[in-house]
Image (cartoon, rainbow, N blue to C red; front, side, top):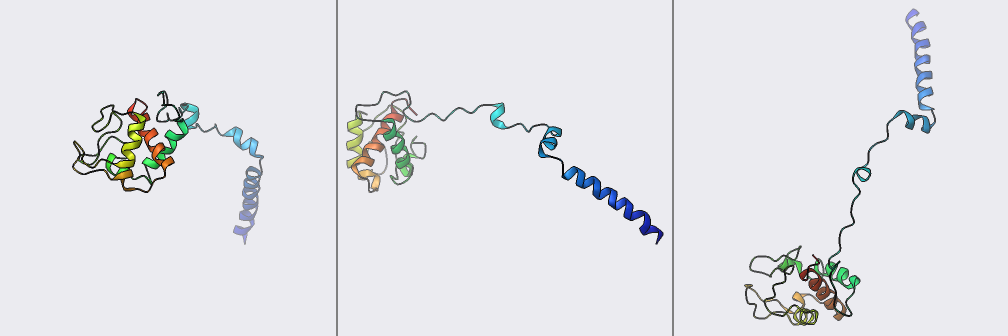
Length: 158
């Protein structure tokens, strides 16, 4: 019985101490701990540069078209499957679209629109042809957006 007599008061004191710490206002707890460093506080992040930023776009072509074209290029347009996800080409399938070297056209916006519509039945370097719209089902607006993206990245806006 003596053992219980000295453990019980000790338990009460320990519980009282924990309760005191747990019931402190949050401000007091935060003052005791140094603020955690956030990565943003250490190095501010620069916004990602959009393709075509700084490139003089042809009349009628907007930055919104370029952004929409990038999204189509990377998904439903299927362009990435031959030209690569970064549009730098894939060996034997599709040429690099980020340089200013054109194999089948002069690189103008209108020529790119027409090439996307009609495809490349007899490519000069690729081992397989490009079907119209890369084999995807695209609207006229989507074709023009993809052409805007390709124009922008091929004219120094990659």
